[in-house]
Image 1 (cartoon, rainbow, N blue to C red):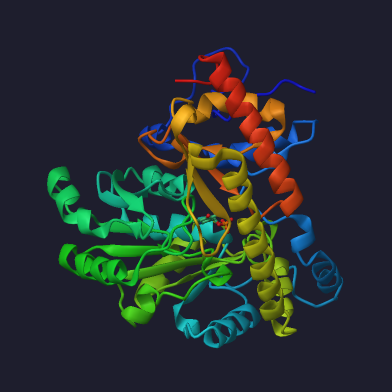
Image 2: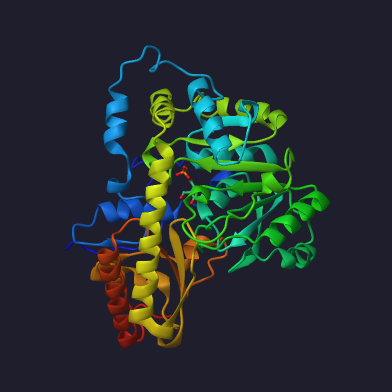
Length: 423
Ligand SMILES: Cc1ncc(COP(=O)(O)O)c(C=O)c1O
């Protein structure tokens, strides 16, 4: 076994040459790096068996790799040329047909194909944020998302989350205490990353009202919406307020097809889309053309609906396996959310584990052969030291039980040590 490590972002190593450091922009102070992304390389460097509850990624057996390989080998002229910045017409056509089937009708004039959901977030915040502008975010939240807002020097205002998503009723008080109205409100309304919770209909309505009152834009980041495996659909912001230019939807195929494709899209007001295209032209010209065609061809074959239906069944089984392993192994010593879709469950340590620091525990857990993402990775303020995110999407029910058993062994060791791994 090699040495377990932590998930902290390593300090810059420099150029290795003697001499003065180059003069950098003030913006670099706002480039925080991602603990979540760093877990990929950290885990790749480990050689022992690890149950992976860390990265929010589907396992290889849930990715239609054989279909992609076949579609990649289909010769087609022009697929290796530059493409239109807004996206390949074939993909936009298939995508709007898919959205219509899902009852979320859009229009090609609202769609911009992006290099994953992350680029959609980057473009959205680039259009909206000047240095010092306030962005309301959930706490906990997907910190890679707010990292893009911070890279444009946004001020972050955290709004707590409960089992019905962001506590929208608290927002007027939080904003009054903060002293400035927000320019943008960033939310993951469905099966939130990391808490797994879904924002209630009443709160969605109230958030739309507040956005109007504050002249703010809602950035509706929805990678997991197609993956509901229990309960009833809750209408989205666009369904509640069709044509509202204050809603920017950020979507991606990363969670329903494959993250390595890096294919996502923005669905936004046509006027804003023109500006979003300008922004993308100064980033990467266009999203990878061959990748767009693979996704367009896959959608064109009509395979997506059956694939997503299969994923829903698999993730339902895995979520239930994790919940029952946690019940069996931890009893009342943890609180776990009960997501109705998506990839993640949020665990808060209670009882004799309440004093364990989830970040300090990480090397111990890795040594026991289980990986997760510690709670502080999901806030700008570094809170939630007593919590962790578990991704149930990657492992089979048997492996999930094994992972929960290892997690319990790591927690017991931390409690016995009374210091190592404890606050
Ligand atoms: C809430 C949320 N938004 C955006 C993304 C980024 O998606 P992509 O991998 O397509 O860039 C993720 C991925 O984990 C996510 O969970």
